[in-house]
Image (cartoon, rainbow, N blue to C red; front, side):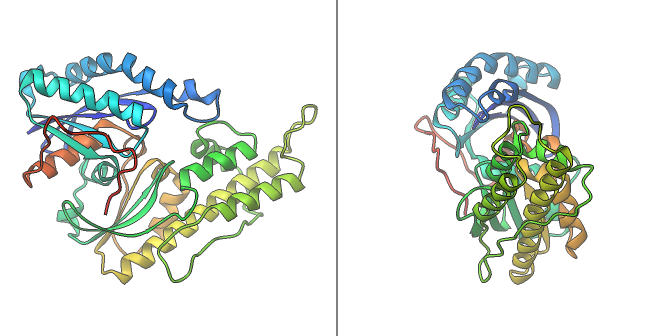
Length: 340
């Protein structure tokens, strides 16, 4: 079964063809990072307009790389939430038009569930390697959710952030330290040569599986002000060593809390393995800390599949279709859609 997956929830126009939920035949991503970097964040209207411009070329390239025409596909899948409303509409309306013109089944996919299924791509198979239930940590610019996956399509939400999502916190920390956008890769790059001499607080939220990053954000703001890094001085560049140490301390605080709380939840709820998903899952320190602390099998997609992509949407659609899930022409977008 070959599924065309379309993803336009934020600032990537992504189209992919995946066979049987596991084999990537093509994976095209038109990123808007450089376009939004000048604003320090994603501008929704700009993102929506760029999706319109990029969609047809991305579709053509995805089919070309897969060596297929429309007759070689079995279904059309698209992200219909959560995300930016205007951006989602571009993808959903494109998918509806394609399904109508080709007669192929149409499937709306939860973006968060798509991140879970990135773990089934590139030769990984959590179900056969350790089995359900699986603990899922989805960490991105808009979400930090901890879910118990009991079977395909069955999730229980155990915890989430009470304030900033992890990716959003990275963006704010990068802005405080005078780094670029998006914040995650910039903070990781700045922290590479740090000695680890500085430490920042950790919000453990004892007794819950929830997360909180607002206090950490405030702590790095106060530290940057104390050292004269923030606000930036026009005539005096920031001390590069201090920026490196603060970036490392921030990153370590986030990775430590996320790894420990995920593993605590996994053991408490009898999970057989742990899965990561979302853009923050590409962070090298989080990946390292989780693997070092875990006694359970850990599944983490390659960095290219942690960020938004169409392959994860197509993979999810394959497994959902086996349960008889499908959508009609009344399918809408749900910017605040939840999972679990």
